Length: 328
Image 1: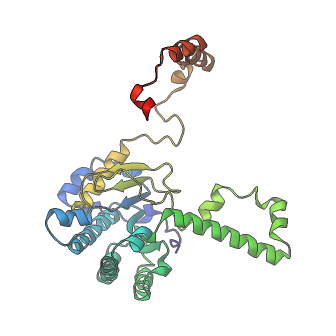
Image 2 (image 1 turned 45 degrees about the horizontal axis):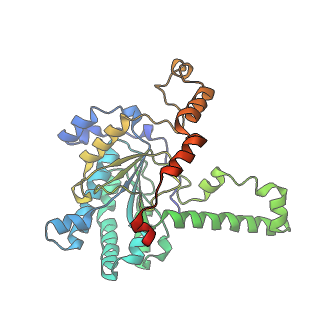
Image 3 (image 1 turned 60 degrees about the horizontal axis):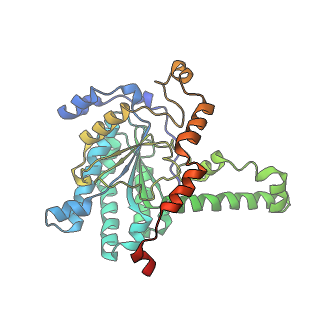
């Protein structure tokens, strides 16, 4: 399922930062409103560990995590964050978790949507989804569709839930879409796919073509990715889209994460310099002129880092086989 069409310019949406809590406002005042990221994506992790630390059952951790979603979404809407994407349920979750836990998560999703549509409308939040949602239970799909339609006219934050989602499967689906479109075009023109490829279709396949075939075709790439629970991995989430995203990892478990912590992550993001493979704003022409010439660097590497042939022979002569290793 693809995300829905883009919203109007977020600058037209009234700022509701005055609705933030006192703690949140203290952090928000440190932010530059002009540098609020366009898109924040969050890998919500730690529900089970949160419950385990309290000797509670895992489903209570998931319930508490759903409450955190409400807090974070409301704060996002109050600061006019245009796009918020939450990794709610991965393809691997669906395949590898116990059926009882998956069933509970589906009931929790349905309950969350039913119980929060009014709240979303009150906060001008629009619902969207990405992932292989057609594999979810039909009654869950129906509720998702209802929530999406009920919030479709909202113009504030777009909350996108990644459900039954995997980045690799997204890329596979994108390739399938491109090939299907190519086959359809060949049929329409009355020629073969080989003819189209020979006429330049292969050369025209570029990054924008692939991006348009992804679930996120109508969304900007995430500026900031937040991962809770301290894990240092991406977990198959938006692999194409986060090529140049800033990553913020916190040890805080997701049920303990709220709007204040979202603002703290954005504050950290605003203190970073995004270079997108370039030199960055702080790098000046004067710095460039002071760089050591490439020829001198190459000579230095050759003289000091690459062993001379005599050194190699000497080192080889000195090396003696380890007796224990030899017996093996």
